[in-house]
Every structure is written in C-alpha cells, then in structure tokens.
Image (cartoon, rainbow, N blue to C red):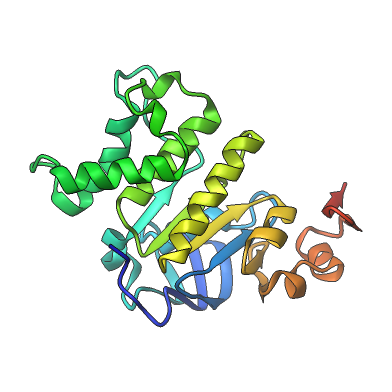
Length: 254
C-alpha cells in the first residue's frame, strides 16, 4: 500500500533547533518532496542529527517551523520511519531477523494485537527488498554490521512510511550492503516516500540524492547536488578545508 500523497513531505521555514538555550542549527529553509532523496551534509557537530530529531518531533523548533506531512512533527510520527546510526537492540538478545522486521508493523497494529497474515507478508517483502530473505530465521545478533543495518532498514520499510529518515546509514557498511540499502531506498521513493539521509559521503550525496542540504550550525545551501556541492560552498561549510574535484567524486583534503 503506497503512503498518502502530500504536495510536500517536509517543509523547513527559517527553522532553528536548540537544546535548552544553546542553538544546534539555525535558519534551515527548504522542501523535501514525495519521491525524492535529500542528503544532509556537513562536518561533525554541524547539526545534522539535531535537525533529524526535530523532524521526528524529539527536540523543539525554537524559531521558524518544520512541517511534516502537513502537520507538526510530533503529530506525524506514525507515518515517519527512522533508522538510527546504531540500534538499541542487544545483539545477544535471542530474536530472529524476521521478528526484528515485524516490529515495523506494530505502529500500525498496536503492541497488543498479534500480527496477521498481511503484516507477515509486508515484513517478508521488506526483508526481500534488502536482499536478506534467506536470513529470516537467523538470530539478528549473528549478522554482520552491514547486514544488521539492512535488517533495520527492512523494519522501517515494513511500516510503509510516507517519510524515511536515515542517520549515517552507511557508516562501517560494506559495498554489498550499501548497494542493497540504496536499492531498497530507491524502491521506497518509487512508491512515493520521501527520504532524508544524513551522510559524510559527498560522493554518495552527489550521485544518489536529488537534493542536498549543506549545514554547519546554519544552512549554507539547499538544492540540486551540482549547485550545492561546489568547492566555494564546501570550503565555507567545512571551515576552509582544501577541496579537490576528482573524476570519481568529491574529496575533502585536510
């Protein structure tokens, strides 16, 4: 079942996010549309994770606004899926891969109602989308780091989100898992979901994303990769680090 259609999945309007009185990121403007992938790019401490938490309704927007699926972020949570950098699941806990993915259905059915045939079918399809259907009965903790990340993405896909948010999903992930993750994300956007990916990988942002939001405590640019990932803008955002444009992508030279 495709997610509901909205003219804009997420709208940032002069949005500023803070913890207590300390600003994390300020003056973010832009629109994330259904069916597109937007990268959040910037150095460590730039405010990428803080902006993600604001989209999830977990930290307050202290100025401007963030609107998710036409509503305040906290009211849209049921239609937003999140894949964190590191999951809180204990790898030693005896839970199967299929059971982890099935967790993605509980926001729809509630924790007290047992999953039905349609829920199990959705979980199986999500696991197939990341190429791990053959590991369904294996214990989650026995998988490699890249495979566990793919299972967590499958859990998010199983919830049939209108918005998917991924925080550094490719850290420590092998090439095979990265391609599987990207393939599953593209399949989700083809069905109309909007995706935000926080990443340090400029080449990934350039090649796999429709638009880029360049941050370092404030927004430097929001637009197509060719317009945003330019040496002048990147030097500004990364504090003057030298930059080279190579045939195979962008390189930051410290």
